[in-house]
View 1 (cartoon, rainbow, N blue to C red):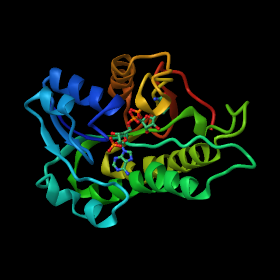
View 2 (cartoon, rainbow, N blue to C red; view 1 turned 180 degrees about the vertical axis):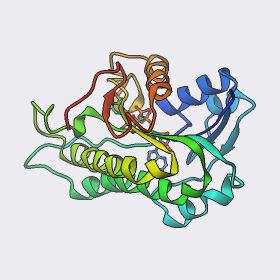
View 3 (cartoon, helix red, strand yellow; view 1 turned 90 degrees about the vertical axis):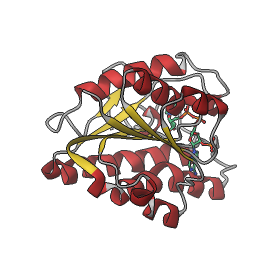
Length: 222
Ligand SMILES: NC(=O)c1ccc[n+]([C@@H]2O[C@H](COP(=O)([O-])OP(=O)(O)OC[C@H]3O[C@@H](n4cnc5c(N)ncnc54)[C@H](OP(=O)(O)O)[C@@H]3O)[C@@H](O)[C@H]2O)c1
């Protein structure tokens, strides 16, 4: 059955691929972005809202009106940033910015849109295994790791808090994906990652919610 899918960071990378694939599957896609791209416009038949700076609390507060209070079946919080850093040369402004974009903004968007969720809606948080402490064997990348760990913590609480409302929350690592974020150095194409994540989202329900899952289906340690 066709569903309404809202995607942040839909203008490029994995978010763009989500938009393409859900549209191709016959779903109604609402694409949120700061700046619309030609690739996003070329999909056709989707709603696009640009100017959505996710660190702007006023813009996020107006999201229900922006999307005309459309009932949401699936919300994919995909937008994120990565600033590499290493101990001794940490850029703390960049560290705080990553917290703001990667951890605070997804929580703020979820709270803003909570009344738009349908009774069996799903929330997919696109995190990173870099946020795992159990999986951290190489150190460094402080701001990104800390911000994604914070997102994971928010996701776990959201899984508990949204369960009574029937909303299932998934916390998903997309794999190492060839996008601008990693200078196209990944192992997976964005299309492959989005296809795998769509399977993971399909499997998601309120009983298996709140777990940290790799795009390949394996469970990651916190
Ligand atoms: N690529 C990987 O290997 C990898 C691995 C693990 C996790 N991830 C995660 O996967 C998600 C998607 O990443 P990607 O690889 O597709 O990266 P990407 O190509 O760099 O895309 C990032 C997206 O986030 C948007 N964004 C960034 N800051 C924003 C803000 N303040 N407000 C609104 N939108 C903002 C960007 O919009 P603009 O075009 O306006 O900047 C862009 O649409 C991220 O959460 C990332 O952390 C990626």
